[in-house]
Image 1 (cartoon, rainbow, N blue to C red):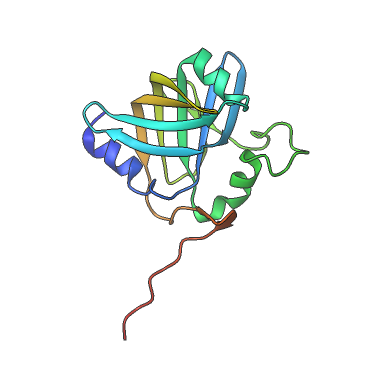
Image 2: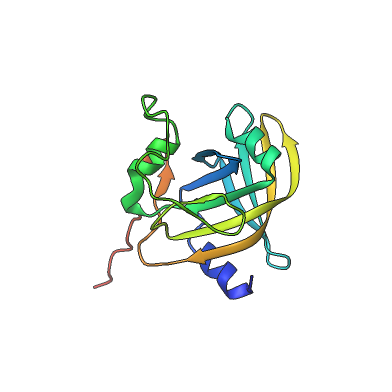
Length: 164
């Protein structure tokens, strides 16, 4: 993993909706992250916060791997699906042709950036677990603006008006 690849993958993470995925054997799980941030460039580390009540938390602990997938504005339905807003959908990966990178955690297609991590550290923080991930692989595609989450509403990137 080189610094430029790491920076390119994370260049739009600041406010983008992030889907955290993991795998234990044949069981895959994905959910929106409560928090996602870069921790260190050397070594390449990120942090995610996962609610302890989710199915993902024990799976990440058990597997020791996860991927963070940063969504673009056209992927709002995935954001809602992985946030559990469609309780009738029991398989959140249904009809999504995901791939895997180095760790085997699912990578969603067409996202604006992803990082594939092994767990570097795990810390309890109230009703969440903070996982620090060592980035093993990453990719950033740029292009479309990130999908934003604000005021309990899903939204789109707001362009800055042109000056006259």
